[in-house]
Length: 175
Image (tube, rainbow, N blue to C red; front, side, top):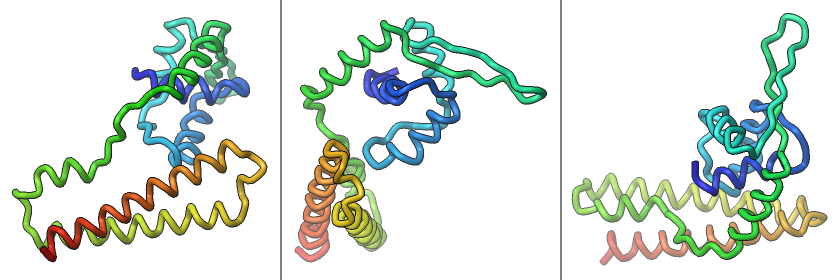
């Protein structure tokens, strides 16, 4: 498991114990705005973190319902989370933008199909920009400056991607 995934899972448990389904739901519904973590299986990473001594697991059962596994940070998990989150501020990992991979293989594509797909991408980027602007203008997160900063950062990234994509359409398809 990457440090990045560990950071997110430990961070979600920082404000209190949660069961696996709740963690998966938070990843899917909230953090997907800020991160791209695979949520197919949350239980394997939780087991790995438990085996490292970073989490404790409590198993409960209510009536005839299935067992519920609830996870909480250990002291070691708290310390490791603090290390990861502070180290992450200094991480200058190159962001992976998946269009770069498609552009690498562009010579093998049907040019008209590629152009249509890039235009669809452009419209999707514009929708994301509109959504971000709406959240920022409504002040949805103004009382939480750290979340507001994330929205503004993502807006800058989306605007750069829109600008790049517009230039790409001109450069490749209208040389």
